Amino acid sequence: MEKDNFIESLNSDFSEIPIISWISQKIKVQPSFVVFLVTLWAFFLVIIGFFDKGIIDLLGILYPAYMSFSSIEKKSQQDKKQWIAYWIIFACYSVLDQLRTSLFFWVPYYYPIKFIVLVYLFWPRSRGAELIYDFLMQNYLSIHKEETEVPNHS
Image: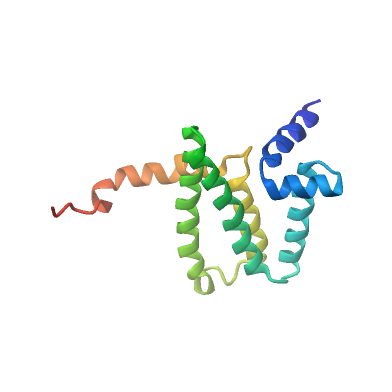
């Protein structure tokens, strides 16, 4: 019964996304199945190294951007916090990614790991970005707030 509730909640979440809803209606499957197939296919391509950076970039930007725009229209502060936290973490991760060749060259399966981390960060049920922001970044930023503030010269 719990599995059915989980699948129903995923269907509810993903049926709000027009392209997923359209595809699921065309091929007559549930929206969660469409998301599962696309995620599995993309993960397979990343594992075999085919267009891995491009897939990761699309994964990390398209769905989060759509959900960020949607959260602006909604009144839920919790959704806004999730997506602002996502973009803060994504920006920090992107800066570190630029140093990847010197820092992470030795990490096997770097892109599959990054794929999993990004999915965790934006997955509707995990709210990973919000959790990581609350646990790691909020404490750091509040401690160093005075150091990071830009002075007002007006």
